[in-house]
Image 1 (cartoon, one colour):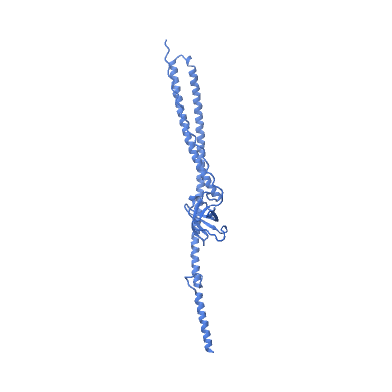
Image 2 (cartoon, rainbow, N blue to C red):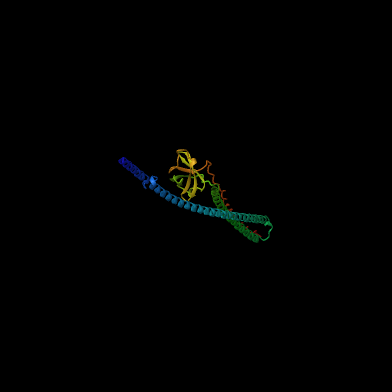
Length: 296
């Protein structure tokens, strides 16, 4: 009887030792035994530290983007002020040109009257000198008007170019305010961090990707899911995967095409008004030839 109890005791001790060994587990196998759970916890703590570091970096990038946006708005306001000042100068220049034209017309009428009254003037030599002087003054005035017209055309062209730049900046600001990426956006998924729920894209601010905008993942010509942009840099960006947007069994993959959400076509760029052509140079009016004095 004692032997039976001894045998049973030995069996119980062997089973206990085996269970203790199994529960102890192996640190190389996460989640198996208490050693495996300790290893798994250490791995998760390291992952948490990396995620917290990544969050701090993304927060700093967001703050930098806000600063850049404020600078962008300030620069746009300055450009609009310059354009308004240039338009005022153009109006002043146009007024000067109109005054010069009116003065030229007045002198022309005066010259025509002098020509009509020429036969009644006694001193022919004196009249010829006055006519030549008036003709030179008229020619100089026409040259001055031509120069003013050319300068006005140049300023108008500069104003048109500035307006085109302002319109482009306004469109970009509009996309920022509406949290929409460029309608012409087309890039690809560079990397996928499925466990963390985000991807990186092969493009950023250079392709018109806007933070907090929604993007669509396209594969084989079909939209399979959506992304939400969380951070944007000059040539790259990061976006969270929107889980509910993917059908069951679908997942974003490296190399998938990414476009801006929505089917609205890209707005047409505003066409600047054509630059005013320089006024043609006025034909020179030949100086009046002095008439031969009449024989006494």
